[in-house]
Structure formats: C-alpha cells, structure tokens
Image (cartoon, rainbow, N blue to C red; front, side, top):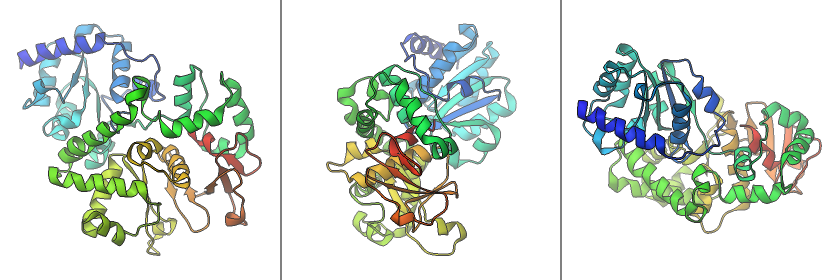
Length: 401
C-alpha cells in the first residue's frame, strides 16, 4: 500500500500541475463550501466533474502533502481496497482526498461507507450519474450535488467572456421581458438567436471549448464509455447487450417523442417490453435519455405512453443525420428544466412544470389555441428574441442555472 500511495502522490502532483479552465461552473462555490465530511458530485460523463474537483483542490488552503487527488480508473488502483488506501493516506497526515470516478473502484459503496464510519478525513468524490440511485445511503449519508450539462447561460459566459445572472423559474414566467433586456444588454454581441442556434448543435459539454473540430466525435466516444464502462459495470450488462442499448438510442433519436408505443419500440429494437423498460431506466439514470410521463400517471388513473427524448440537443446532432425541429425544441426545454424542476406531459399543452405551469412549445408564430382557458399557461416560442405577455422566448429557459 505504501508504494501505491507514493505513486498516487506523484500522479496527483502531475494532475495538479496541469492547466485547468479558469471558468468555474455554477456549483463550484456550493461544493467548495460544503461542510459535510463526504461530498459527492454526480453527473454524466463530459460535464466537467473532474475539472470542478481540481478547481476545488487547488483553491483549498491546505499544504500539498495533506491533500491528494486520485482517479479510480487508473490501473494502479485495480484490486486495491479504497478503504485501505484512504486509511494509509490518513495515517500519514492526509486531511483531504479527492476521489474521481469512484464507481470504478471495487465495491465502492461499502468502501466509502467504511471511510465515513471509521476515518477522520474529508472526501470529495465524483461518479456516474447512476450512482445516486443505486443506494439510498448516497442521499442520506453524504452531501450530493448534481452537475448537469452546460446551461445556455454558461455557454454564453464561456464563449463570450461575459458574466450573466441566472434567474429562477417564477421570475422568467412573471417578468421575462425585463430579464431578456438585461441578458441581451450584457452580451458583447447582441445576436442571441445566433448563439442559441449554435448551442442547440454544439457546446452542451465543456470539452467543446478544448477542440471544436473533434466535438461530435468526442460525444460519440463519451456515449460508448457510458454504455460499455458505466452502465456495463454498475448494472452488470453484458457486452453483447450494449449494442441493443445503442440501437435504442438511435431509435429514440429518429422518432418523435410519442410516435412509438412501448410495444412498437420493443419490436423495433428486438427486446421484450420488460427488458425495454429496464434499459430505458438505465439510459435515463446515465443521462442519455429523458423519460417524461403523462401527468395523469401521478395518480395511476390512466394508462398513457411515456415521452422519450435524447437527454440534450447535442446528442441528436451527434447521432442523427436529420433532426425534427419540434423535437429539438422540446428536448432543449426539458434538458434545461429537468435538473431542478418536475416535468410531465399532458393533453392540453406540451409540458406541466412543477405541477403548476402549463407550457406549449413551438415556433415564432405559435398561438394559444391549444391552451386557451388553461390557467397558468404559456407559449414558449423559438425564433423570437423578446416575448410579450404569456409568450416567452424558448432560449430564455437556458438561464435557470
């Protein structure tokens, strides 16, 4: 174990000597100030969890020999007890350790629980978005933070080198005209619709800014890593079944959200309905798919199909040659809304948000005929810079975080 620790310290110094982006995502301050003994960040691959943890480690006022970064996907940790390693570091004066890709460690949930119960050391860890669901202890014992994809606001802050405020949902619904003017005034270039069109295609993942020419290729690589490594390992999916998951993603990509029933989707993919439900759950946990049920299902009163979208609009761009504009609009709205709000779909309108607001999504000429006489209802329209009354620009919902 001593040799492993020495190697880990050397790798940690190498990692900390690398240049990291100056831009700090919206969760940075919350994670940095987290008072809990163990703090976890979960999210899909590629959203910037490692960068955030390195930023935290670099900014913490601790001597270099008292803090350590490790990644459990490195070969030196294969077959190593995570508890024994952390115990060794603690005995030698370690006070804080950052554990990246914790789901790659053997029996990581039990190992982390033992660290929590027996060792006096502060830990930050990152892991697949699926880990929060696999064990209720993650929600009960540890301070858990979800890092979603970049918001449109964050994309603009990085690409335009500006600072823009985020707004809560109530403010966007009630005071959107003022908010729009504030946002556009803060931009160097005022072409908000041009930037929005760009964001729908690229820029959801922070690695876009590392190499824009390889961005879509890297998304495909990220998808494969999630399927073969994260889901394969966490849910014991055999390698020959991963191709079925990929086929399911491609089918969702080229289909409208309610075009295929579960029966038809299962038939097209070539699996049973029970297996299909299980695979959809896995893909949703991994944040590759958004799974939205009918609002009546809250009360188990009717049998309705579920809406399925790829989890963000860049996934459509990477996996589909042709994209349905209406599906992209709905997918953008759902992807920006789902990190902090409940979503259902309904018969009148496209979405019910937080069991209160009814939203109909469409193009610039979209009217209110489908939601007339529905209280707390709004048209969310693409291709408009500024809204009026209960008609709100679609792009504005990218400023919730």
